[in-house]
Amino acid sequence: MTLKGKTAVITGSNSGIGLGVARELARAGADVVLNSFTDRDEDHALARALGEEFGVTARYIKADMSKGAECRALIEQAGVCDILVNNAGIQHVAPIDEFPQDKWDAIIAINMSSAFHTTAVALPLMRKAGWGRVINIASAHGLTASPYKSAYVTAKHGVVGMTKTVALECAREEITANAICPGYVLTPLVESQIPDTAKKYAMTEEEAKQKVILERQPSKEFATTEQIGGTAVFLCSDAAAQITGTTISVDGGWTAL
Ligand code: NAD
Image (tube, rainbow, N blue to C red; front, side, top):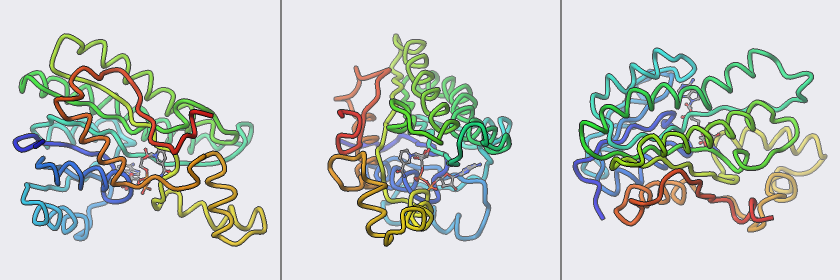
């Protein structure tokens, strides 16, 4: 299959899953717009290198997904958005009665509300093009809960609900909306949790990965960014044209338990 002629905007895509999804969409022929809240030479160089590697147009646009106006400006500046991947996300772990309000607000804004703003501006562009794909990167935590992750779990459940609503609103058009729910993927977000986890349980970092982080993932393996990206490519394919309003788990069996 080819996504030649399509343009994908991927939020939060200068590392981890977002970058992996951008790479797989570009490999399939899509032009891509990378994004994060930084505006460094290396961000633009990353986009240039990706474009050269896959022979597609790749741009980097700075926009802070914690701010509604910047989310909207990202899509406006992209100008075209056939495939929207809402991926930007952060995490904070604390008991709910000690959860800092600023962390709560940031997680809800970046992990959930950003998808509302980008989708609102992207849908008219998709309608104009007569085709569109909204792909929200939710989480196994959009389907199940874990203690101490109240804001993250709330935001990801919200994203799953928003995905279903968008799917219904666009059901008579060539526009689908689906959520990918990854289990653990070894990205900077997860890597940053390993030293503290190891310290907390008095383990080596390798033991912390296997016994604590992967405890709920029956495969006992991390999913890869390529696998998440490949799932996004599938959702853009003709084979997935009738798949809308659903969640696809890429979690080594976590949510089957
Ligand atoms: P990551 O930290 O590698 O990537 C997060 C991305 O979001 C980065 O590109 C970062 O620059 C960007 N970002 C953060 N704040 C931003 C902001 N205010 N504006 C714009 N961009 C911002 O983490 P990741 O693991 O790749 O996470 C990506 C998504 O996947 C998140 O939504 C996360 O919740 C979800 N997810 C990750 C895992 C996992 O195990 N890694 C599992 C399930 C879901």
